[in-house]
Length: 142
Image (tube, rainbow, N blue to C red; front, side):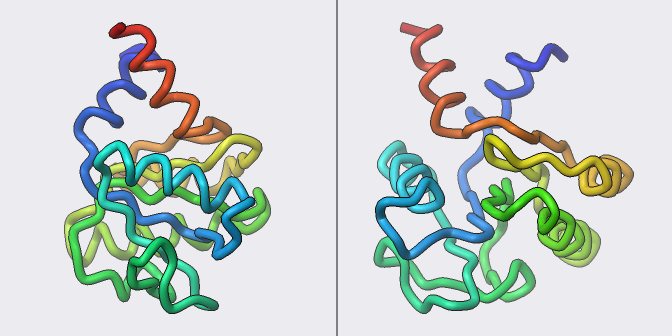
């Protein structure tokens, strides 16, 4: 599948996005990108151990604590910190059977994380902005 078709498929099939590293600061990308996606109908689950509520949604300290099904784990961490959320996603997939995709936001790349995700049947996207990709898909359909 071509990259564009893969991205389209992810965005069309996804309902629930756990945002790992979601920010409390409305000026940061890790806040306004998930806020935008929430407005487009996605169920956003903030994952941030330093917050209780973001966007009027309960925050969870890690992926293991999230009670709902997770389709995509969107990661807002530095590249060198991206392996931990992937480890959590892999553990969750083995335990609960969810987490189909791990998506590292634009500017975030980690080949060890990619390898771990793919070896465990998780589709992996890195260095792409979900906000921009959503807009591109919808521009192409317009």
